[in-house]
Length: 338
Image (cartoon, rainbow, N blue to C red; front, top):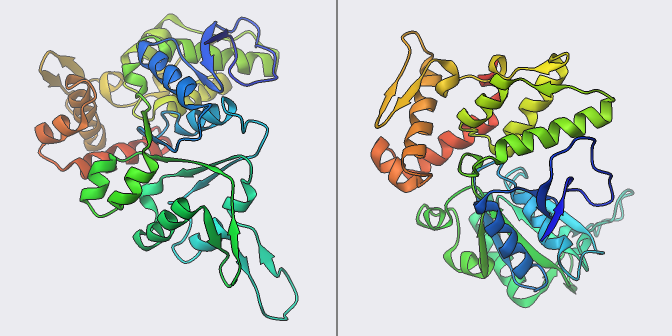
């Protein structure tokens, strides 16, 4: 494992950046991240399919890039496609490309991501959001390592390593009919779970210092976090994980002069008048319903040490509902901060 102060290859470390352990583009000092690093270093040099799981913003794409960088394919392309962001009618063409047999002018052919990733690595991000009928074809392509472009009659073979990721519980996705069970076992030859930031000890503060050092280096400034901001880094549960943390530090940097504060940027949980006392959550009268619900969910997750199934049972909701709530908090972070 390399001890470095910046996680992106080929760039100088920002001035006063903290020393962080890194594998590829991933950074962290916590025990949870050391285990992730160990798994990546083990599986990276192989050709095994990897399934990355974890909450939104926890670093699944960075983990995929790190696996790519640790492999013999590191000089080849790294292509990522978000399976949930593509309309169902277009995903086949995006994956496998298409040919236009008509004589009309314009583009006659289009290479899909399997062709564009040739010799490298392809990340199928949010694979559980792929239409179930498309999963059937994907399974066959993974097994035969051959595919047809849409509208073509000639098979194309490919040499690509496939990594998949999801922010859902894969087994729950199978039970809900969102993921084919046979495709799950084809993708999850080597599963890696990305830990949420709230379970990574002091990593939040170390990463915040790292992001701030990067911004200082870019802007030629010497801004720093206040003592209260450092305390809040430890108290906040970071439902949006590293993505939320990075965005928060960037907003604080833009708004602050020399000493940066986070309190105006964080809502909900202890930062909005709620306190956890053992098994009880004290909520200030007049708190927003959104913040109350979010605080309760976050506190329950903390109480059960991140075990979503136990938290969902305690909250009286389905595991799917809990996942949707957490995803919503991450995706609507800007709205929650307004």
